[in-house]
Length: 148
Image 1: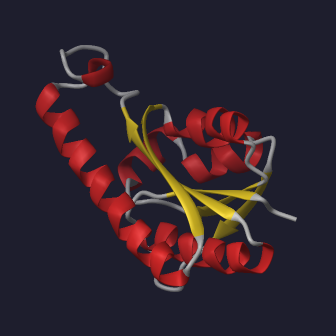
Image 2 (image 1 turned 180 degrees about the horizontal axis):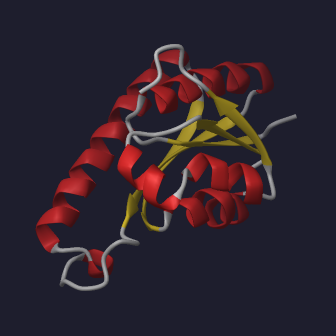
């Protein structure tokens, strides 16, 4: 039923819980998981770093994204589930709802209820809410018992 499942990861409790749910589904349907972290550069319009982000900030964000992906890989490998990984740069809402699913034939997006960036969520809205409203694929929203 679900051949390719996208799991956006941001290091939050909710995204870890979403990963666990996606692993359960992947085992059930023999699916491949796409573990994706997006470095948000939409608040930066200047600088010399990747995509306009100040270089030091980009380096820090890239290191954090790689750490999140590495932790997810260890968990998924231990569960014996097929996976691929990606660290993307851009608007997380657009990448998760439209770009990545279209480029990778995604059947289902399994996403945490909310992430770690409460201030950004307050100012510009939740990535999860955007994905639920705008994705052209099925979306499963997972809420951790002890959410952030």
